[in-house]
Amino acid sequence: MNKKPILLEEDFNKDKARELMLSFRVECIPVVDGNKRIISVIQWPDLFDKRLERQKLIDNPVIIMAGGEGTRLSPFTRVLPKPLMPIGEKPIIELIIDRFAEFGCAQFYISCNYKANLLKAYFSELGVWL
Image (tube, rainbow, N blue to C red):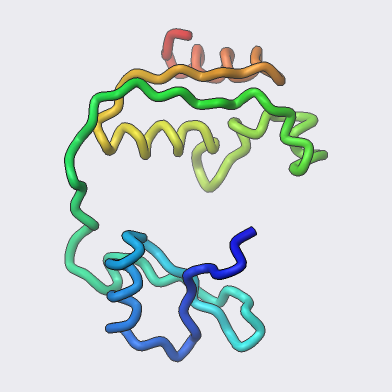
């Protein structure tokens, strides 16, 4: 839990939003109402002309620890392991890999235990060798 999240009130000032994005190097900030409920999200392209520039590309291997049972997400994790839970169109693990790939990472190691056979099946279906 983050006791001091980065957020904007619904009557936010665009200059303040830009300042927050630059100082915290974030690409989106939730906009909340008076009860701190999210009513929208302000994104980088809403305030700037281009995406946040990357410092430099790195070519390091990445280890993703995906072996837990995901008990806090039960009963969903009784069917799928947490790394395969979808967020939008893709599972969490694929979003993580895509994000690292943006920085030049191309070699991934996945440490898994719980429902490892489903992770292997998912990646073999994509044609990725495990």
